[in-house]
Image 1 (cartoon, helix red, strand yellow):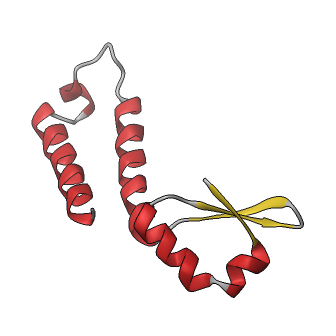
Image 2: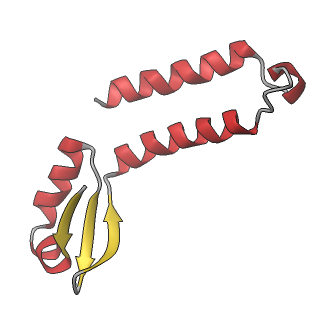
Length: 92
């Protein structure tokens, strides 16, 4: 993760926004030498949010119970994973 001082970020916003877009990496903004904010572009945020949402859904499923008992079929899960992969490929 790149560390940037708040003043440098404010003075060069467009440069760092472009850097976030190109690298898809977050930037840590520091204020008075201490971490203050983490900045990431919107596309990267949405992609990571989808992955985290999927992970949360998968963690809710008890390993001892089949997916069907929780209301999620394997076909639905596969479709959901395919949609995430396609959106991630399209964003690259």
